[in-house]
Length: 503
Image 1 (cartoon, rainbow, N blue to C red):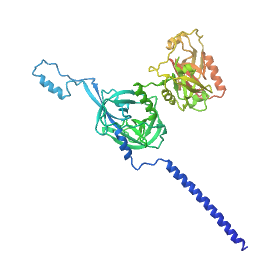
Image 2 (image 1 turned 135 degrees about the vertical axis):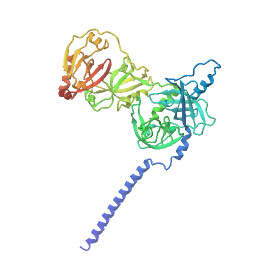
Image 3 (image 1 turned 60 degrees about the vertical axis):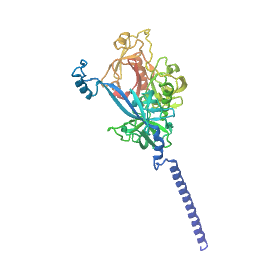
Image 4 (image 1 turned 90 degrees about the horizontal axis):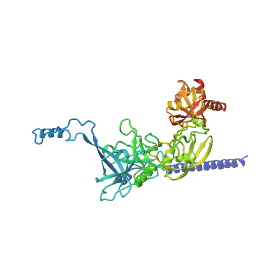
């Protein structure tokens, strides 16, 4: 017994030592992971002073003026004979009231911008220089110079200027960076001209990406809490490498001052716009000729989609690029030129950024199956009007009436096309009445609408509508997908059966 006891103690000591080694190794790995994460993180700089000093000379204040006609000029100086004793009296009186032309007045505004090369090209916002008669660029060192407008893009609120007479000293300038590499939480620096106070620097982080503030069709803003106020418009948003990753454009503010919610046009969008303005003096966006809408859960079920991703095609421009590629109403565009269309607004940006004339692959879902189409991108039509034929239909349907889903339906004839101002080639089934409490009424359907398709199949008689609705219900579907035309403007509507039954 006495001989075994030292052996047992030694074994316990060995096991304890092994446990301690394992624990120590685990702690080393844990601290190693923590230190590695700290190394990967981007700590707050001790000071932004060096960066601000380096970048500020390239940021400019932009002063504009325009002559505005007053709608009501008020009293004018009367016409008097030369040498009249009252001439000097009236001249003095009207001069004190603002001169001899009270119908005109000068309006001035201030904004920001930044120099992007040694040739004197300057980026700012369109709303900063819009309708300006004169544009003056003021530099941080006190120099100033007149500038001319190269081009503007109101849809992204960007403008490109060029100095008419460059200052004698070499210009400081900054470069665009990659806004796609910017992450939520990254430090950023905003430099601009808030409230006309001259070069001001504010710091913050990127609060969000891909913000849609409903300012235009290509909204994709970076959101920041760096203080941006009136007058910062057109100024740059820098990352910690000193690259411009955004053009400060808008703020959300109930008070008119910064509340920590500012928006910047991402540099990856701005670069494409600025390059085109520099080359052409105007924007030349890609265009494929479709009208689209978001895919809701109800629409996704009717379209046999697994989720709500993509852009649903509601109309295709006749003889447009999409029509020639074989795109059909009811297709859901899932990707364009290798870029996934996660939501509807992704598609206009992807198409707009594609050069006209390029042929790209487009993946669509059609009746539950995906297929790839090749579309040659056209130049965006400024009018945006679809071309439609004016040929008279070859035959008319015999009038037939049915009631379904709270709607009274009838076949189209010449008289009804004239009564409801429909095009001669309009096909489908006419809605003549809609019950006010029906599911159809809640979805916005009304008298005069035309049902073009049911479950993505064309219909021409009320009986066909009835059959297809019953077939959808028999298949266990909870809703039926209708394609509805209202005087040529088409849209998809999903009517739930349970809502219709409740009504």
